[in-house]
Image (cartoon, rainbow, N blue to C red; front, side, top):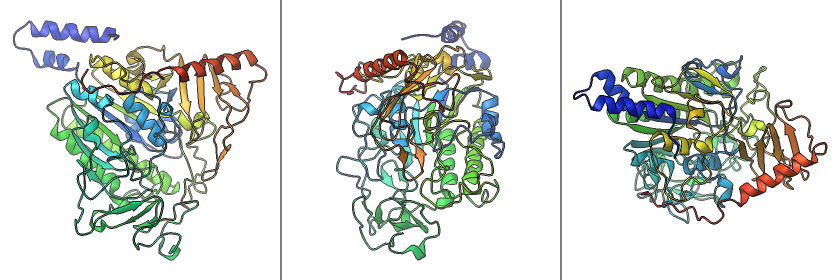
Length: 524
């Protein structure tokens, strides 16, 4: 395992301090820097063009801009996938999600899709002496195979893969059940009103968008016509659990408060908080504080709401005097999408705003708009403000954190994660030699040496809900991103040798780790 120069410096500082009897406050602080608090916030469906620090001029995100101005702002960072579940799976496990068969977009009653024997990034951080918590959107399943039973203690849950505390939205806010789960139990559930959930057929007699469109306050544009919760038709059918249902307008407030409580509770010990925000994902229902404030409709309003959440977390760190030694990462799980299933006027009210920035495609896509995401890291005690153009993949957060915390990984853990700690901290501009991405249909792309190769695919070329170009084509695609970042000209036929070389490289990557069952025991 690589130890970076800055770590050697910090370890030396700690060793000198420990030999001097009682340490001064400054010396103690320098020693404690070896274990910074870690906050990792995954925004949902936020595009690289959605933030003013990335060039947006139709919406203002001052808190996120402040985070970027005080840290390392990446311009060439990628999610592992263009959709939520696999992207999160890859980051937490250090394995490309396409190596597994159960990592597609999970329904709301999916079993826990991360094997409990897997040595997750959270297990590693916990073993380094951290209190660990997950708050907000989860979307990696809960419970045993056969579907989640929400009426009893849900097992396994996130506590079985390294988290001490959980307060989660099981899947997405457009999927049932519309309830919170805290430490394995549905919050405020009345046992006399049990929850039933199905993704195959209607259950109970609650109204649906298809049968009772007159009861709908937010109409679907595609799909989203099953059980109506709070006037909004969702994906999937649900009945029961009325006392446990969330209020959409309040979700951001609720999960932000839970995150702040976790930080305050663990302010005197190293902690890791993994937080998933829901704001930009449909249905977009801003709190009244933000409704109508952006001028871009509800999609713009919830971006303001997301920025408020980041400000609240930053202010909490400041008030507790722990911001200096808190490593704070803010990013998105995939690229932006505009109309993702509800008639919320997102297209009509863009007013010149470009959620994908200059990039082609978006959420679901193999093109850059699908996986090139905002990525910001702030750690005032160590990181100097800078722009980082080196390529970086979220798959490498795991190994980089392991290096930071001097943790040795057991055999089989995080097989695809590479250690790039100095890149993460803005101390090196030499990033990954290659980036692998995955679209909705598991079509893979490889970025290497400035070239981007998209493997041939017979899948549909357009995602029918969103009208997004998926990047699928029966012929190989090749783009020189340095000259053509918008991927307008496929130059595969003009460069057959490069196309062949990248195709072989991708096949070699696919063939790696096939001998491992990805079962790495939780203790190294």
